Length: 114
Image 1 (cartoon, rainbow, N blue to C red):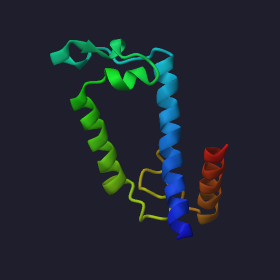
Image 2: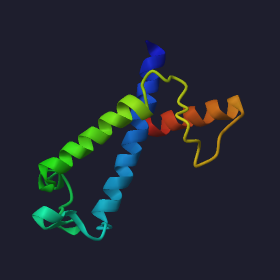
Image 3: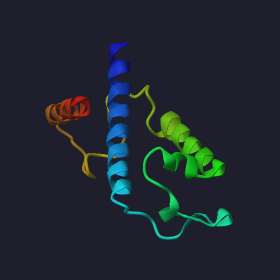
Image 4: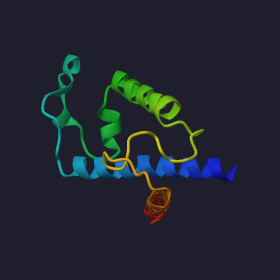
């Protein structure tokens, strides 16, 4: 039970770190060019920051986001994989040394708790 909770903590920490980066990027008004919904004539630049942005995205877009999250949760980053190695490496490189890998995973957990 502890190992599963540790794996879930690690996975959710990674997702939270990615969300913080996305929030920082969006709050600095760095947006994609073009339309998020051409049929609604809605551009990426029209989406407000904060919680208001959630309500500005069309329903079909939110459904796509939820479907992608479900795919990631169930297929790509399964909670049954307890070692924290999801095959994507550490910034594109694989960490082969078990001691170094354990140190990096522990630092990742500690950074997520800060």
